Image 1 (cartoon, rainbow, N blue to C red):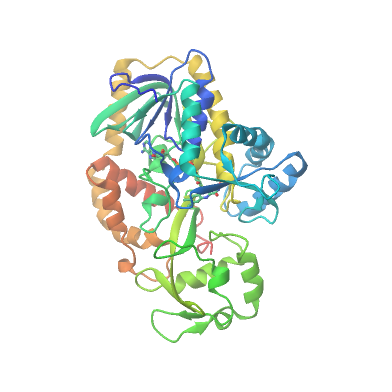
Image 2 (cartoon, rainbow, N blue to C red):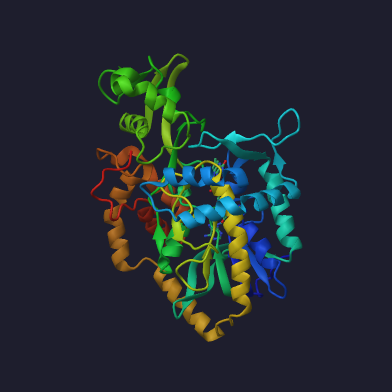
Amino acid sequence: MSPVTPAHRDTDVLVLGSGLAGLRAAHAAAAAPHLSVTVASPSNAPSGSSFTNRNNALGIQRPGKHDRDDFCREVLALARPGFVNPHLVRIMAEDAEARFAELEEMGLDFRRNDSGDLALFPGCGSRIPRAAIFDDLAHAHACFTQRAEQAGALFLPGFTVLGLAMDNARCVGAWGMHEGRPAAIRARTVIMAVGGPAPLFALNVSGRANPGYGHAILARAGTRMVNTGFLQFMWYTRDRQFRSPAALLSPGNRIHPDSGTPVTAEQAVGSELEALRSARALHCPAFFGQPQSKLDALLRDARHHDGFARIETPRGMEEVGLMAHAGNGGAVTDEHGATSVPGLFAVGECAASMHGANRMGGCMVLATQVFGHRAGIMAAQEAASTALCSQSRFREACADAKKTAQPSKAEAAEWAGLQKEMTRLATFPDLKTEKPELTDFPDQLRDVAHSSGPELSLAATAMLLAADRKGRTDQPFYL
Ligand SMILES: Cc1cc2nc3c(=O)[nH]c(=O)nc-3n(C[C@H](O)[C@H](O)[C@H](O)COP(=O)(O)OP(=O)(O)OC[C@H]3O[C@@H](n4cnc5c(N)ncnc54)[C@H](O)[C@@H]3O)c2cc1C
């Protein structure tokens, strides 16, 4: 792996994050001649939900020419009540075959059926078997890293971005911590690929080495954001075994409330139970605004003080909690991954507009490849015709960004008041009753923040963005 020395802090294209999105973007950018591309992230080891997720496998939607229209229809139907850009959905459908072919060429370990053909599965929210699954994420990480490196990308491990440097409303680099010391990287263009906000939540199942405050960094740079409140949550046991509400609420199973008498699923739901269960069986995360979301709401409201619901099933008492899995919001991007901020691109789970409130299973991995590729190309093109900002202006830009990231006195005071509210929001943003003791969000935040002011402040901002219900206050939460 080609390291960037700590002294070498200028680059043409800076990629922040080394998950599927960052490495795909780095590969595309590094293919441009005569440009330096630097991938900066906390670690060179597999990281993020891409390479360290608990399933050790990922599904990717693979629409072909014959079913592009169906794919777009399905994705758009799931999007409400979130924002989606149909143009980007179409682009995902059109670019999917080419990006998928590259993954096969790279040697990813795709599941095959007995005859050796690619095995295809319906992704969450779809009835059509069009998603392929690859196993062994460490192997996938090695393939992606090797390919980006062969294309000429340089790697700067040990770097955690804390802010974007802005000069005349243009992004001109990033600052953060490199192996415990403040560091800044000047760049002609920057690609944010730092993943989503799920790690902010006390109960989460996301991958390693993502503090979860990418949304806050983007928002503080003035990037237009959307869908930040639409996170995917799933029901897991305490030892992180997935449980579907469709199975948990089988007829005869009994919900044990915090206090009072247990009720059977059919008593709690009534005659709709079977229809709702069969709709709910089609997807793992709770969906927003769909009839079957009633089942998630029922479990949500049945949770005890520790955040876990108790369901009595034929195999014993199941204790399940709602765990943050992935986000469907982030920076609004165009078909090249460009954000509303000149010089700044966003890809992967910190980007938005190609999924709405609900995302079809396999669409995030597809988006990392389609828009990672496109953003890498465009960031390189733009870098080729953009000058680096001067050293003196860059120093000023970094100083300004640091000031923005430090919690101000007012913020710190507000934080004290918000903490209680955020504790409530941490497990789920619309608990009917105040149960401040319900989550260990302050502990989670301590993990996120451990030593520094900016991290605490970014985590708080990201938390608020994740709980964002701006403009939607007239609606109950979407379950
Ligand atoms: C258990 C699980 C299963 C999933 N299954 C599927 C699936 O089957 N199909 C699907 O489409 N999606 C799935 N997802 C979602 C999908 O895996 C992720 O959304 C996707 O991999 C995100 O890729 P990414 O590159 O954007 O971010 P990540 O893979 O999370 O990578 C983020 C990168 O940014 C780095 N980083 C973070 N913060 C900073 C910072 N401040 N400074 C510098 N670097 C930083 C991290 O270290 C990491 O390298 C799943 C998610 C989970 C948790």
